[in-house]
Amino acid sequence: MMTTRTLLMSLPLLALPALASADCLVEYKAKQDDPLRLDHGTIQLPACNSPEQVEADTRAELATRGWILLKVVSTTDAN
Image (cartoon, rainbow, N blue to C red; front, side, top):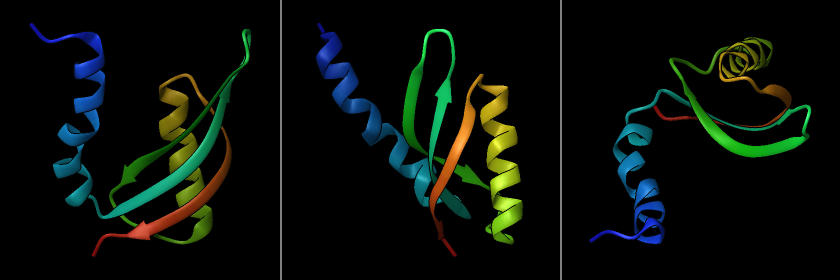
């Protein structure tokens, strides 16, 4: 029987193949209000365009998930 802890520990391993095939990985900081929640994570985008476009694409994707982008920390071009 798989415990919750085991499941949570294995989730990052399941994401590795998806991250390896990404064209652009964006590290970000985001928030949700009422109640305040903060998030620091990564998101994959089809391409690392200009910094302005990466920020706009990240903001739009996070908004669909209910998050507000605070800052793009870094980008990594996987090509």
